[in-house]
Image (cartoon, helix red, strand yellow):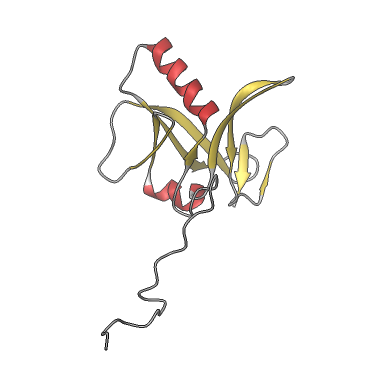
Length: 132
């Protein structure tokens, strides 16, 4: 007779993320975003730098996304990688950004990084702020 524990919530592993969709505490970097990050790093001449993403209070709907270069990773930071490039997120921002996808889009209205964030409940018309 085996002495294995029953599958209770305390010992059941979390469900795996669907292919192409990050898990609740993960952030996906798309191929397009990774390509643009690599281009910008080469242009800046900082091959070791990473993009830091996060959220801060402010903007017309409550929060604004933070998008800046990180020369160093703090001990509490989480690093997410995809397609050969990495991004850095602080633990407080991860509460709001977990499960999102960082993409880079090109269109008639211009181009830029896009936060595909399932946690966002709304955003302002200009796309610069978000609420959760």
